[in-house]
Image (cartoon, rainbow, N blue to C red; front, side, top):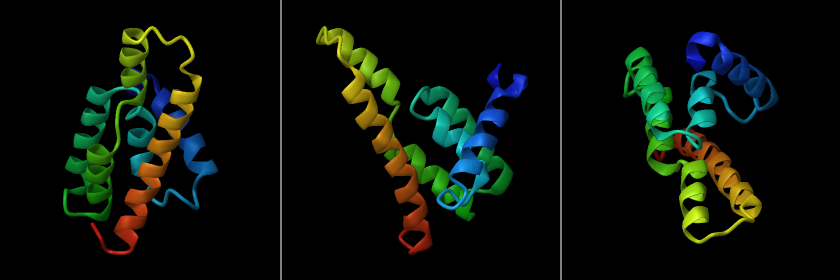
Length: 116
C-alpha cells in the first residue's frame, strides 16, 4: 500500500537528498527506512532490490549486509517495553534508530574497503 501510494518513494527521495554524500546507493534508502519498522516489508524490499540488481552487485551485497546486521527496532522496543511495563521508551528508541543508521553506514563502508 505504501509503495503503491508513492509514500515510500517520496520519503526515500527526501532522505536520499539529505544523506546523499553518506548513502551512495539510492536503491537501499527504502530498505534502510523500513527495516527498523517492519521485517517482512524490509524482506520484500530486499528481495526486490536483489532481483533487480543481482545478489553479487555492490547494491545487492549492501542490501544483504543491512538485512543481516539490522533489527526491527520498533517491534523489539514495543515487545520489551510492554513486557517490562516500561513507559519511557524514548531513550531506547533513539539508541535503536541510531544503531540502525550506524548499521547502514557500516555496511556501505565495509563494501568500500572490501570487507563484503
